[in-house]
Length: 102
Image 1: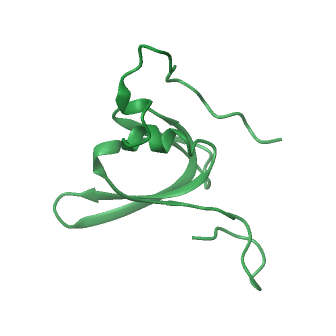
Image 2: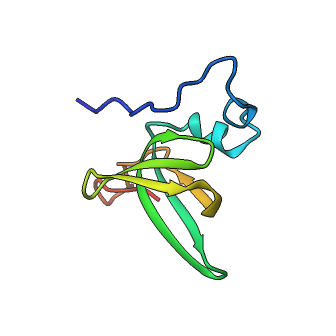
């Protein structure tokens, strides 16, 4: 049975618009909680690095990813994110069996 996502950020009528209006990145990403994603981060001026995991939670300035390799939680700076790939069918690959489908 899959684990329930960790929900640390509580949303209510007093929450800032940045996490309630999906025109902002945090609010959009909150709609993707529970999905497998690949996040690419810009480190410095020209170094991209990526992480793959299940999106567990999103705050105003961070995301929490659960690593698919180690099951550890990874706290990520939202301001370093440049690209996010959201897996629609994460474990189906045509003619190749199962695996991550990015």
